[in-house]
Image 1 (tube, rainbow, N blue to C red):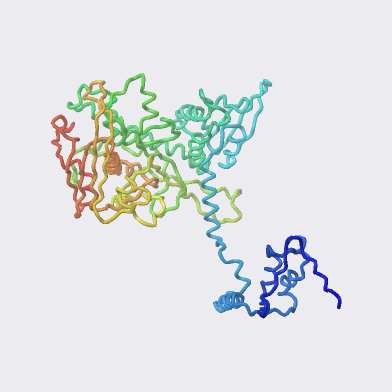
Image 2: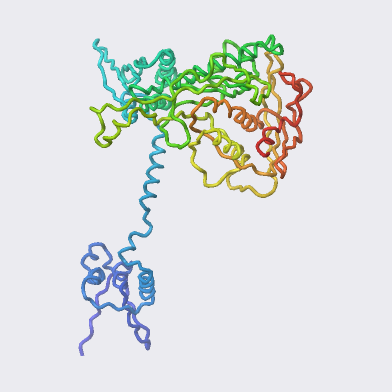
Length: 577
């Protein structure tokens, strides 16, 4: 007999020998067993080069295309096929499986809008390329003009239907800015220089700033406001710069008249001009401004921080630019809402005497009556038939038409107001453009948001705040720090919304809502300026638990009226009533 030769095995490995007397278990064949064997770490042929040449891999990959018999005895394979059968029973074939989890077109569009909104938050840097991109985005015409002196200076000239802006550069650094309105009336052109200075301050390189980090944000905000008015204007016939300037002229006359009435009041004899100015701003019809406090355009200031403080003349400019002021920025917007009248170009929104006599059949509360007027409507001229739009051939036959533009108000900062006040504003003829919230929020949650991870329960919410606040003593230029400890007890939530912008048709609507806006402003600032404890009861009434606002020194108002402790919670009582 010949001696059997020992088989060759890899070095260091011993072939597995079956136990004596045990029958060998046949391998189970599944659609995945061949691929598992190929990619097994114990298989010497598991390298990528060997996988390409593996017959088992080729058979498993081509099982669906060739008629190769496959064994489905594995329970896992049966379960997998059962799940596929169930999907097919729901009317979903294998061809639909790749589409599962994909976003719809609406979801993709929404995500894209969110991405663009995030990108638009950054306006870029101050440079020739940055300003050129901004002008292109605003769809205004522009061109570059090189200096004839060979000094390397370039001028960016931006032209619109009613504005002209010249920005001079030298090595990507702004040297000067010139703004003009060639086709506008004098009530617009007299404010052009101040607006140009604000734009230049937004672009010029100040001390300590670098041209590599100088942001274009503040300039973009102001110039976009001018660009919107320019794009909505129609030449000839509709100059929106004149429309906004007309409201400013009327409200300026109203402000001057109210200031004169305050000065004639015997109770204010000896008061400083700053005190009287702030008194009119915070209690009357506000103070209109044009191109002030770094804001290009018209704004109506109606509340001011530290309004009772005396202002040092040397600090007047700093105070005007840095102290917080609540205002309404007036511009124009496309007409989209039904029920709001289009813009009217006029500076006669108020009668020449501002005040009028009450008629016998009119209800009169005792105070002066403002003589509000209704200017005539502004019509656009009929379209030239030689330049008629071929897509709208009937437009040239309609004759004069009303403009599709409306006055627009932006609240800076936005104001939190109860839903009841929101409805009153709608009844006045003003339309809010704020999106409808999915769920209404209580007033205290908007003013004092809950901490992350905490939910508002049914029990009474208690909010406490203690801080050091500077206080000015009487009329002296003495400031001391006083501790204010504030507590707010909320037993009944007041559903509210945030008002950030709205459309209107008459400046009287803005003056009408100012007292309500001041109520919300004083309430939201109560935790910063006073020691007040309020209890909002279940019936909506307000009880003043503790306060240090009213005392023996100020129980009598400036007009002689006797103040009451209940007046501290009057604004909450108005909303809940």
